[in-house]
Length: 354
Image (cartoon, rainbow, N blue to C red; front, side, top):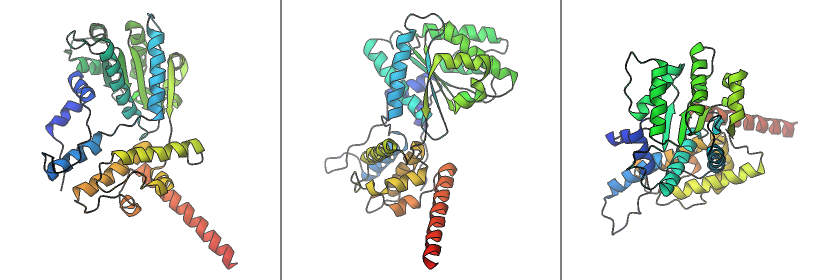
């Protein structure tokens, strides 16, 4: 049976203020266990569990902790500056949790702002904002994204300078504290318009007092970081490099195993005790290539399968995990592991026969 999205999912979009606020203020919560006192049916409870598994699990990883620390320092450094503001950059390959980390950091900043400025909604502040860089965008394209977030009208006669004026005024009026610019790698390339967009962002650092958080694929090694423009960005931004876990590292193995146990505690399965997957830690690493994003999809996806198929025993095991198809990157990594193991086995047998 297919599970379709509801119209309410539009409320969780990140690139408009109203929907971003709704997402940050209304995180999905784990449903209460179903018992004799429950007022919901088993079907409703199953739907709630699948919803939570689909988008509610947010872990406080070491990357999030590092992001908090660096953002705290950037906010402190920017308190009295009127140019050259400091920022933070999340850089790494796909499926490593850059956007997920950014969402966790946005929620944290909003919570902190609410504690310090409790009446910000009545004063019509917009403490955090989020924008995605369109592929191949120039400065005007990027400014349109900013305008869309703040609900500003954009007319065909508006020039880049007009839009920049509108955006800067909106950011100042809204007292925006954190500006998240995702998909930053879309500004890498040779097109002349991309340089304009980079210059626009650099100029905004001086125009507004907000702190910027950039997210992108392998940004530190991209053409964006080369030349005079790149040097200015690199000199202002602290970088969090998101990497796949390495099984050869004792620290990574320890954190990986703890990560699995934390996921297990959130899976909402009726017959799956925490620690069940302890012996499968290395297998899970091989299945996912050490990617936290792939691990999340594997465990939550397999758990959703159990719930949706109304399994009599809701327990994850290797057979179920083997049967779940992951993203191509993870599946390719696992095929290489299997081929390498098969090659080692064949060599060992040949030596015995000799």
